[in-house]
Length: 263
Length: 255
Image (cartoon, rainbow over all chains, first blue to last red; front, side, top):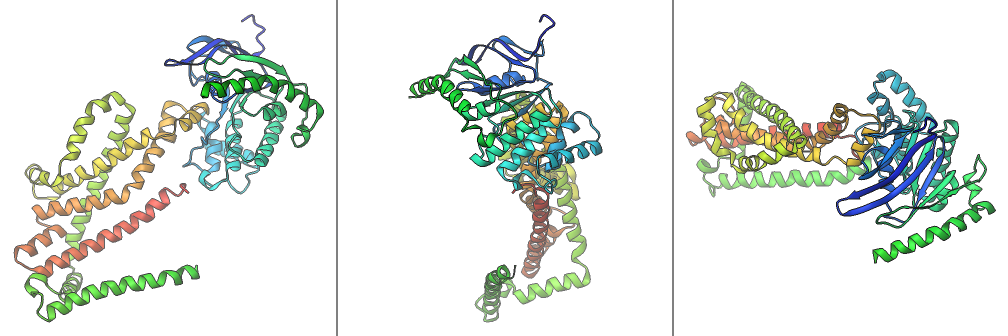
């Protein structure tokens, strides 16, 4: 706005209603360029709505969304999106899926394939380039999805509980790989999860949303854990435990409130 | 592999035995005079007739006509079904407008159309193709329609976030998804195309397997009727087997 916009994403008093249901109400949120921000909140608190707004997949009912200082109309062309559900093109091979974004943007087939092969190696899927998604495990499909969204090199990555369907150990590995990728090419990440531990381990900042309907931002916490982080051990570090207790005290109230409203 | 083969062998043997028993008792009943040969013919006579047809080459032109009609009926019906199904799914208001009429037409038993098509298109192959098209079109139309509407919105959103334009969305997401449904109905629509053109031939034509059967009936040649039926079944089974293989290949990405 004033030429010094350093926010990659800014939500300005955003409200989103679906018919009579108000998902989020008057949310102000700023994500600094290059930051890794996690959003946590009880289920049904409008976390996904927040991401869809930032992606431009839905438009706010009130308020405005800004991307690098410019107000967003239609799709957010500077963002990649990693979905909670399986979103791969089932009829394309691993190679075809990873190359898809480049092909859509007009990159020549041969170059797109060559770059897709690099990414296949990077996410540890060598030997699977001709496999179809249905032939892969859940963790492998997530790797494909990760390469698929990173290969087009977006400035912003929106991640909607991307690892929630994985078992604990696969999940830990994927989180580590995500952090490695992020360290190698820093992007602005907005990472939605219901798991406070995951949010803490990954992010620079944790945003807590209140129980829905009409969710709002309850509080924001800076996470001063040093990087690079070793996710295998981080959960047992004293500072991690302190932060966890501190934020959980707040999140717990919202979770309990969401139980009350559900019953 | 070996284990599987040895477990499969017995059922194939039993199947062959069942067929042999049925044909054998048919043959025996006729030979013993319990069944009238004039009404029921005899397996040995039917087999002899088929061999004769194959030897003299008499059957081939008729079979070729029937297959040509079925192939054209399928191609035209499937192409128009895909186009219309896609178009109406992408233009929901138009789809809603014509929906009752499409259902109305689909509810019509196709056989009653055969005489009208004979009037319109004559005794040649096109009246049969028209009949086949009316059958294939609706199968493919409904499957395409369903296929386009069935696309997972998450997959569509993913493609859009990856930068797909409207046309790329159609080409890389909607068409493949719709084709899934069309492919999985291939053997039904091809089988129905065969049946429809044979019915058309049966009701009025100068060539084709349906014509053969109807001619044989006209002169009370039951052997010819059964031979025609046997040839037709064998061809439909053969085509179905080929289509199944094709379908497996086209849908190889499905687990």
